[in-house]
Every structure is written in C-alpha cells, then in structure tokens.
Amino acid sequence: MPDRFTGKVAIVTGSSSGIGQSIAIRLASEGAAVVIDYHSHPEGANETKAKVEAFGSKAITVQADVSSLADTQNLVDQAYIQLGGCDILVNNAGVEKNAPFLEVTEKDYDMVLDTNLKGAFFLTQAFVKRLVALQKPGRVINISSVHEDMVFPNFASYCAAKGGMRMLMRDLAMELGPVGITVNNVAPGAINTPINTALLADKPKLNALLNNIPLGRLGSTDDVSALVAFLASDEAGYITGSTYVVDGGLMRNYKEQ
Ligand code: BGC
Image 1 (cartoon, rainbow, N blue to C red):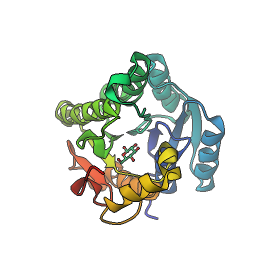
Image 2 (cartoon, rainbow, N blue to C red):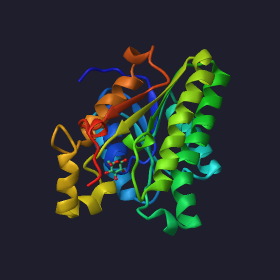
Image 3 (cartoon, protein in one colour):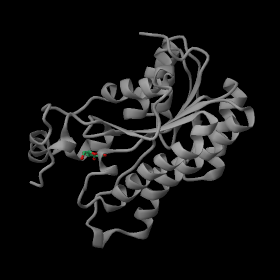
C-alpha cells in the first residue's frame, strides 16, 4: 500500500460497519489516525479499531448521533483532543426507509433527513470552523448514492436527502475552495453491506437488480474505499465540486422491473 496519510487524522462517520468501516481501515492502512464514529454498535466500532490498530495506526471510537449538533461538535473536539487535529472528514453515516410516499411518517422522514443530510451539514461546519481558525487545508468527502441523481421509488425521503447532499457538496466546494478545502461526493450503487440485508435475502429482487448492473455483480466496500482514499489524498488536490460514481454501471442502465 502507498503511505498517503501519515500524520493525517480522519473522521469517518458510521464506521462501525459496511462502507464506513472499510473507509476507516483503508485510510489507516495508509497511515491515517482515525476517529471511528458509531451510533449504536460499539462492538462494530471496536472491530474497526482493532483492524486500524493492526496497521500500526491510532484510532479512537466516539459514540455520536450525527443529527445532534452537540454530538457532531464532540466528534471534532475529540479528534483535536485525542489525536491532535483533523484533516479529512468522511460523511458516511446514512439510513434509508422503504415506504411508499403516501405512507411516509414524519418520524421516519426526520430520521432519514436528519441523519443523511443535517448530520453531514453540521459536522462539516464544525470540521471547517477549526480548519479556518488554524488556516489549514482539508478534505470533505460525502458518501452520497447513485440516488443523489437517480430515482428510487419508495425511497423518497432517501432521495431527498441524497439530492440535498449533492447540492450541499457543490455549494461548499464554492465557499470553501478559497480556504483550501475540497468537497466531493462518492456515489455508490448497490454495495454488499448491511443496508442491503433485505435485498440480499430476496433472490428475485436481487437478480433483477444484477440484470441492471453492466458489471454483473454488487460492489464491495473496498471498491468504494479505494476511491475515497484517492479523493482524500494529495493527488486529488485539484479536484473539488464533483460526484464520483462507483456503481458497476448501474446508473447508466437503470430499468424499472
Ligand atoms: C441504497 C441501496 C440500493 C442502491 C442501488 C443505495 O444508495 O442504499 O439500498 O440498493 O443504492 O439502488
């Protein structure tokens, strides 16, 4: 592995499982110290921590509900207190709720929007405030989804959140470019993670989806974290304001079944 993140600190939200866990481990494998954020699975966060430490990198686990401003502030504070700073923010924590539009409740809408969008918004604000005060550059990478752009019937709240994340990224790239902070989205398609547990158990649905993926398989978490690592690295210093899709071609081949 190259060693692109020695001396850097990264916060990865939702890194107790799935894509977030893979990102935390990938950044650590190249030298980053990592803040492992988790909501309700300390055992998953501890597993990530053990894997990070196996690379000789430092890690702390911090419990946070990213929809709480106090909790997002604490994530950034802990990075500075325990790891001496923070250079890279990966807004990965996300939830989705399958429901026809007419059955979406206020509670579920709030959960999806607050976690996926509000959380990324205010955590980024807390992260950037510190960098601006210190006049340091930084990287913000949001894990959005192909559904920041592509329809997903019965997931209207998720699409609203991810579409919002797309415009948030574009706007912040403009506002933060002058202070040396890049902002990009990584948009995964169907990746083999716990968020897709129901889909993986439903063979007809899974096969229909696979028929829509030109590369003929679900993505792995490593497919996503390799791209995140590139965007977080110095090599991506001139890249800001865009979305990078990692979906096996799904977005170019979507058909309603
Ligand atoms: C969703 C998955 C879905 C995939 C492709 C992701 O953003 O989380 O549930 O399978 O997009 O549609």
